[in-house]
Length: 522
Image (cartoon, rainbow, N blue to C red):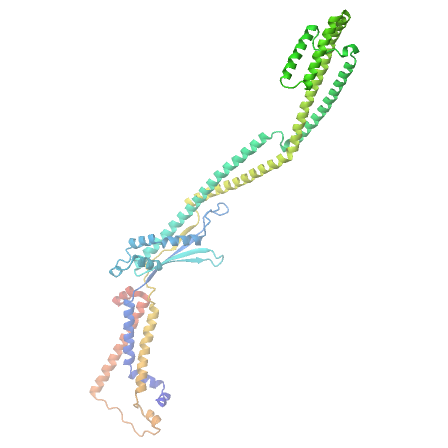
């Protein structure tokens, strides 16, 4: 057989194919029939797709800035999760009467939900320039073209409506949050204003901006104090000079405030009452008690001496008369001294008060600085919140008027005509290759097992002998009819195989419905 294979030429191959054409035609026809059968009986899976464009907000961001912080991908993912939820899928199954055939009677609802969930996909497309999401598609797969197209359009509407709702809800939520924070910040600002007001009222006069005034007042008070002290010193000197001018014989006479003896006696009675009052509080050794006792004893002694003689009486009368004038002048000086001392005391108190104010000024300045800093910080926060609140209100109005970022349908879902599964092109190629391969394999096997000689040249090659003569095939009418019928059936079978190939080709590229229409029209 190896020698035979070495002598094979193109004519020999053609002769083999023609002689054993049935082993090519029959397997090829069977392969086409099987391919058509699978093309008609295999479950068809269709796909319907909706393309959605992400349209930016219509108002320029330089004028109105959106407060929707979530990104497009995050919102698409959120809405996708809502679509894939059990509640929403059950509504879709009920709305479109999915999985209602008898073959789905014993299938659990969880399996139906899982199947539908696997048949729905959301694919995001990013821009090649800035890698931002600019579009996405919703794809629904299933056996029923009309239903999956309706489901895809329903999901698209859900996506668009839910996106608007999410954006508006987020914008309103942000605006409400800013409103609450603004109210809180307003209360805090009012509290700080009230605290600052109370602080200014409480420490009025000792505030940092009043330091210069306090220093000037303090200087003026110190000048007045110096003048009053000088006046007090002069008054005391005049009192000393006045007392030094009293005659020696009157210096030891008790000095009283009256101008006659009656007043003198009245003063003695007051001294005695004062002494009695002091004795209720103090002992006899108390300085005031001793002084008053001494005054009373001197009075008794003087009154006793007065009754002893005329000379003493005259002296006493003169002393009492002179003492009235002296007492009046002395009282005036002492009153002046007392007033000056009171003024000095008041000035000293005022000086201490203003010195305390000046001393506490740095402390007040620090405390006031802290209060003002808190107030300014809160005021800045309030202004920032107020600005963002106004921007949020504008953004909410923009979202309500649907001027913000939106989803716009570019391609609506249509009823698919050609299934995506099974892969008809692959099925077509497999059927053609299988038919040819099986036929060629059978022919090769038969030729390998066939040891007969078909021509003289093969005999010469195999035996190495020259062929002297050949006997041609002798045909009779019966054999001729058989050959003619064989040729006719071969042609018809070839035409059938090409017809089947054409049908499978139409099924592959045009689908079942259009193929049936083409065949009917043909």
